Length: 341
Image (cartoon, rainbow, N blue to C red; front, top):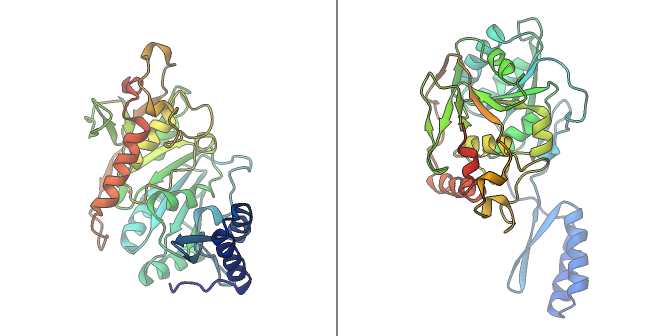
């Protein structure tokens, strides 16, 4: 997408701000910067020069459809009354068969009262055509409703999930990652696990760790684990409202599942998410375990899934994966209370 030309009135504000900076009039410069940011733009300074960029890509109104430039632009239903059983959120990018396979499985096995939300994350042409057909068709099972959320640009992993979660109407949210094919009902066991108030997160792929640095998949017979793998991960919508949204610094999916599981389990978070930049945050200090309340649980449920290799998926970005891992460690590397199982 070509870079958008800023409106002339914002250029005039930015020029005035630049002049105020040269005059060391910081109060005026800060006020003008605030006006620019309030209009949805940001100033990037480079010595005596500047550039103006959209704070987020713009939404694109196509008449019958809006493509959203950011997760925050998606109209939220999280303040509405909860209804139904669970909301399953899926991401669609460039592999129509991968999405179709997952939807067929969910429609066949999901309990009544399931809402399917598909995030059309700037999909390729073939995927976009398939999603247009999906919007025009009934899903084919009683009690299952489908909605497609379109983006104008390719969002990062956490941002794309946030865009879908904002449309959730059910009390439970289940994220179904690309490449995952349920072979039986995976939502029902997650719903059953989350009926227990001591459980914060559930799914069919458990993760365990000895040191909060390296996470391995749990054995098939495990129940209580440290985190839930991102193939299928379920949690309460109310917990997302209180502890979310997902941190959009996680541009790739790496480490996002472990981080979000620990956020959901974290007994120090009565509301809001931990601040990774706050030196007083519990992630930044070594604590006496006896002083901490008991963490909520992560539970591995027993439901058969297949994880397919994704056709045409972009190669792993090692730099972004490393940044995501460091962010996980920043939050939780010292929280040994969360090693309880």
